[in-house]
Length: 90
Image 1: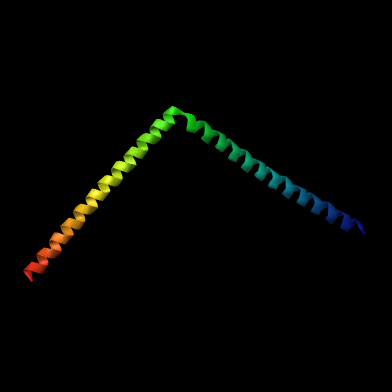
Image 2: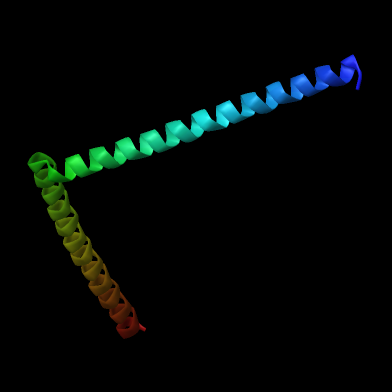
């Protein structure tokens, strides 16, 4: 084993170590961020202000769905009337 081989081994060990450290840093940041987000979600679920806002949003979504259903029913009715009018004119 010559001096060139030893240099290549040292370079490979250095690159491999750097990759491992970088992968460990990414994994640590991912799991730390994930656990922090979970803690915040649990804390937010107990917050009465957040729960009140969520209830208002649910109410708005529900009323919007009802209004959209009314609009679509009106469009179906109008379409039926126009198609019946065309069949009577022919």
